[in-house]
Length: 638
Image (tube, rainbow, N blue to C red; front, top):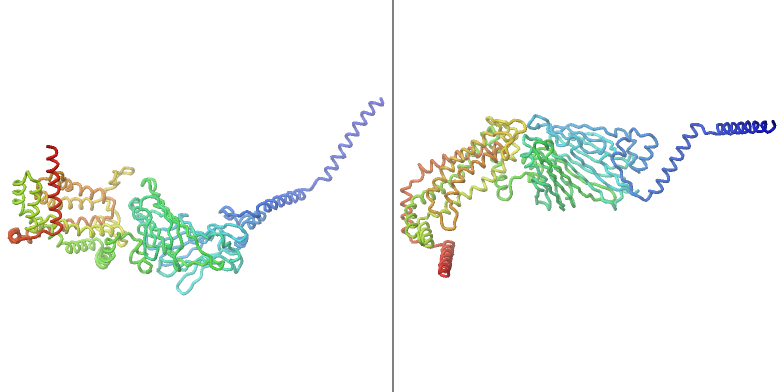
């Protein structure tokens, strides 16, 4: 009984002891407030240890670090401030964060991003695209403009998403937009934009104040400008052909990155660089001293015209900037506007050289002749009529060239019986036949080259106009007859969606068809006459007569296919030009050149002794040497 009683008492004792322990634990347990305080203390200790471990490492900020700075709790804000260092002051400034600052001028609708201080939207008020949509050069984050720099406390920061404090003021008629990234009320990094009335050039400066002890001047400070070209034309492939990164360096040298493929270049002494989007350009100008070095790239974004329909090219430029006394000061110009020679030339910085007028003499002809002439004519005539009048003036100017060609053809036609007789007489002696032929042509003043050389004089004019019409901003969205836009193709029929003829396109343009018909009849008249005067092909030489016959059909076909996607103003020029050429040829042939008089002059020339010039003598010597070598080879074979 006593043992059972002891056991029961022991069990009860254990239960009581357990209960007392539970009660004591409950009484000594921390309150929820104490638990929270302990957690916070432990978290702060962990953060302190992390900070201690990383105190000698560089800190690089990202967009996520401060994109939500306005909604962070106190702990997160402390952590962010630790990461931003001195620039954490900017987090507490009014009117920062994700907002936009809007400003309008006579030519711009602009929006500045308070996060980054850069232009977030640029709309040109005076222009619309082919579909009547406003022209935007910057929109929907197609452009980045930011600076990367180091700080004295071993941080690397980027302005792209840092909070700037905006300010808009007036200075006379000009509007000043100041975007400041502040370290204190008197120390800041500023992007300053000065907008002038009716002006596409924005005076832009980057400057710092009171940051000489904040910047790490041993670390590079780099301006990074990226931009995608937004499509504005009916044919993105045609627009892309004239979309190109162009730059001027060494005071007056102008170069371009590749037209239709990816390209990159590092250039020193850059005066300006242009992100050209055919008829509109974004240009960065160094207003004080040239950029010491620029790393540029161009990436073609159009691989499939049916799929890649939004952007043409991606341009990037990385530009190292220099510190001066621990501060940064750089004066620049930002041009957003039309790629128009008259507008660009007004800035006296050779910005018009970014327009592809053609190299060498071709560009000179455009700048000295065709641009002023067309500007004068279009000042009082409708644009289509101005093209026709300019074509007539050009053809009149070159009419003497056609006269020389037809005169040479007439002489060759008159001499044809004698030339045929020479070929028949010396049919077994090719050398003698060629020598006698050259002697007769020399005496009569009827060398075939006299007909070719005048034709070569037309090539610079032809190519200059080929470059002029696709780049003539004045033709943009100007209509004529059925053409809605003389700077684009004149579609009279669009194929169903998804259907396109390789090399031809998804539409039918009428002016190239008319130009092809005109060039066919012109070549039929001229080439047919030249072919009739051709003798039998020389041994080892191509049959020129047969080649000319092929060209009669090949040239119009090339015109029809190639120009189907080109500016209708260019096709209009070729159509009118060939019609006028046919008319001039008929007038010269029937009313100006008298074959009897030409024959009389030939007879007089033949009666006069004529010496061979150096070229003719050298050619005769080469022919004799070739004939001797041929005879020697034949003897060795025997």
